[in-house]
Image (tube, rainbow, N blue to C red):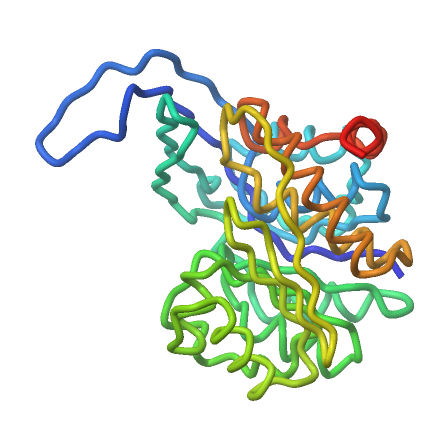
Length: 297
């Protein structure tokens, strides 16, 4: 089937800090690095490194050439990239000594996605690829509707969450990946079991993966509920952990793995990623995940 990812691309400006800057405070940064990032780019790289045939559909603005070079070097198909005459999206990321991150996001070219562009990309697809997307580009509700009408399974990582997402008919989504905060915004519930119960009642055809940080994740699809724990590691940078999980999970389903197998590999890939600095550069290759699992099992 393959994966087509309508995804963001960002140049990440990463500052290593003793702690996050507080209001009125000025701090020196211990280190500064520039990385390729954006939830969309990260997830495309994760899916491709996991072994899936991956197309990235998105907008590369001025100053974003390094992002295309990075995607291409990781085997991602760039045939449908748009090139608007606007500044490239970027992020300013603080990473604390404990490995947590705080992010300021400037959308830039990522908000240049149009309905016409979406239709053009979808009309040229063969078969029924997974259509994956996140909430860092424009026209998210339209992409979901258009892909659903074509019979493409839609995978939506509802992050970052904002009020616009309440316009979406979540019953048209095949797989929804959310954390506790995002799941709570959608359902009005706060406890993981209550979030999943409400999602299953309202959208019984939608598979839900609820990520719970150090508590792992819970996957619910129909009558099936699977709990997946984390693999304890020494954390360096959590920036791309969720994106690594998402890309590996969908690549696993695309490869025909069971839900248990796909969740396990996604969790292992995420664990490897947090032991490394940066966003996309931290995402492991499939053989690294396999080796990691052999060591842990």
